[in-house]
Length: 568
Image 1 (tube, rainbow, N blue to C red):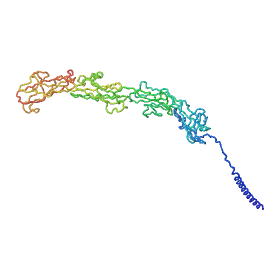
Image 2: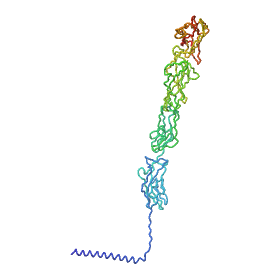
Image 3: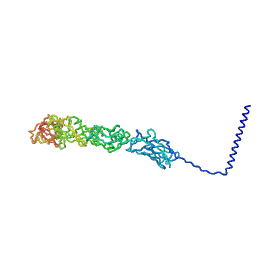
Image 4: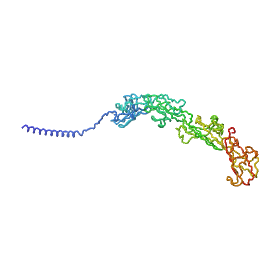
C-alpha cells in the first residue's frame, strides 16, 4: 500500500513541473512581444590599463664578458634580450648600473644611476640589443640590471633581471697592461754565439699575467708575431710582471744591426699601450775577424821547377768567419810565398816582389762547394803561385841551404778586419840544373893538316834553371863519313878536337876533347832576371894527314853541372 502512494505522488510532481515550465515560457513570450515596440541603444565603455612588457628570453651578454673572457678596453659589451608586451606596444631594453629605472611616456626609459646602454624601439616578441664600449676608467667588475620598458603614454617597465651564469651580471672589463721601460743587454754589440736578453718593466692593473714578444718585423696578432714563428727573436712565458726573454745568437751570424720590435700582452692578448709598445729595441751583432787554419804549401812536397818556364805551386788555407764565409763577408784572400830568411814582413807588399825569393799578393779563390749559404762559417781557399824557373833553391850546395820556402795567407773581411797566418813547416825549392846550348858545331871546310886556328867555332850556353853552371864536355870517339857506324873511310879521332873558354885561343893552346866527360869551369851565373847571362865555348879541329876527303860528322856531349856557389 505504501509503495503505490509514493508512485502516484512522484508522477503528480513531474506533471506539475512541466506545467510550471510551460507557464513561464509563455509569460516571457508575452512580455517580450508587449515591450518590443519600446527598445533603446545603450553605449558601453571600459578602461583597459597599460601593462609593462615582460622578458621571454632573459638578458645576456653576447659574447660573454666574464673573468675568463673579459671585454678589452675599447671593445663593446653587447646585451641582448627578448620581451613581449600584452598591449602590443614596442619596447626598449635598458641596462643600468643599479636596480632602478624610470619609464618615459612615449619614449625611451632612463636609468636612475649609470646607463650602460639602451636599445632602439623594438617590436614586441623580437630580440632587442644594445652595446657599450668598455672604457679605461671602468672598474674590472661592473654590476648590471636589465629592464624592458614600453613607450606607452602611460609607460611601464618590467622588474629587473641580471641574467644568469657567465653571460649574466656583472660584465668584466680587461684593462691594458702598463709597460714603462724596456732594454736589452747588447751594450755596444754582441759577438756571434752570444746571448741577447730583453728586459721590461711591466705590470697589469687587473693582476693578469703578462707575456713579452720580441719580433723581427713590426706587428703582432694575439700573442704571435705577424710573420709567424720565424719572425720571432724570442718570447717569454706568461708571468706576473716584468717579463723578459733572450735569443741565443748562432755561432755563425752576419754582423749587422737587427731590428727587434717589443710587445707586451696580457693573458687575454690585450696589448699594452704607450711609447714602448712596438718600439724597436734593436741589437748589434759585432764584426769578428776571420781566422785561418790548415795552411799548406805545395801539399808539403818539395818543389821541382820546370826549366825556362813557370811552375804552379798551390797554397791552401781554411778560413773561418763567424759572421759567415758567404755573401761577400770575406772581402779578400791573398797568398804570399817567400824564402824563409826574407820573412813575411819582407814580402807583404807588391813592391817587395822578386821572382828569386818573393811572390806577394797571390789571389786566392774559394773552393767550390765549401761554403754554400749564410749559415756556413768556414771555406777552403786555394792560391796558385806561378814560380819562375830561377827561383832560389834551398837544398844542399846552394846559396841558402838553411832556408826553406814558406807561405802566408792573409784574409780581410768586408769591415777591413784582417788576419794572417804562416804555414807551420816550409819546404825545399830543389835545384834545377839546366841549360840550353847551340845544337851544332860546324868546323867548316878544312884541308888535310889544316885546323881552326885560333879556335873560332862557338857554342853558347844559356842557363834555364835556378843554379850557377859549369859544364862537362866529351865527344864520340871519331867523326866519320858514315857516323855513327864508322866502318869505312878514315875516321878523325876525338882528340883532334880542342876547345877553350876564352876567345882567340890558338889551336895549340886549346884543351883536347876526350870521350870521357871533363868538367869545364864555365861559371855561368845563376839567373836572377828574365834575361839570363850566357857563356861561350870556342872549338876547333885539326884534319890529320891521310884523311880522305868527305863529309865527316860526329857528336859532342855538353852536360850542365851545378857550379860552385861562389861563382853564382
